Length: 305
Ligand code: NCD
Image (tube, rainbow, N blue to C red):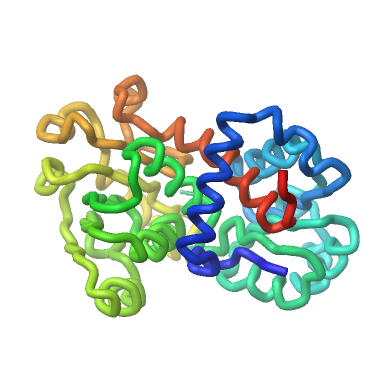
């Protein structure tokens, strides 16, 4: 039985398989509509979510399966003091597969150690978010045609942003990718990403503090929200939250072929004046999340269509 806790739990070949399956689902949607008939997905969200939870649920429904679960810790027995391990053992009696989000780093990993069914990490604190990464990879593949040879600027909260940590780990296994890390000094990527991912694998990376200085080089700009819920101090959040706002004027020197990505939710990081720009890929990215989760559910359940 396979779980998905860290993006590198999947080999590059397995990721390729999931992305190709997602592309087939997009082209031949009806072929899959009963693929998970009689199966149940549980979504256990101990932390809020719109896209991840609803796209998981929509994915299972479009595969003909059913969903159950909860959308906040308050509506689960966590409030009575139940451990994550016990919750997972019990839900594993009711569901065939579990997608779980938790504010504590490592909680889904703990769950996977006792789970009788596959566990998918749908975000654990500031750590990882592997299904957002699959979403991002499918988006890059569809927008750019290839997962190799491009320059990506990751901008915003690179310290607490789990989508950024997971995406860096996954992309570090492809060829010819240059990373430009754009953040205030307080929100730089954690040291382990620099040493364990970039330096260990001899990857081309650079840290800068403004997007203007690197805009002409970028093939992709990946904007992120400053992660309010992970700050210890409200004043720091308020000071940093609007450091980067991408708008028309900032794109003056950008490539015509730039792709603008964002895992969403957006606060102020991207002006709504860009929403109709053909380079704005973030709503297409959200849709890709549903297809890639369909492909992931099929893969982890071992369903062949
Ligand atoms: C992200 C998350 O939850 O980490 N959202 C998402 O899943 N699409 C990004 C964020 O909350 O900023």
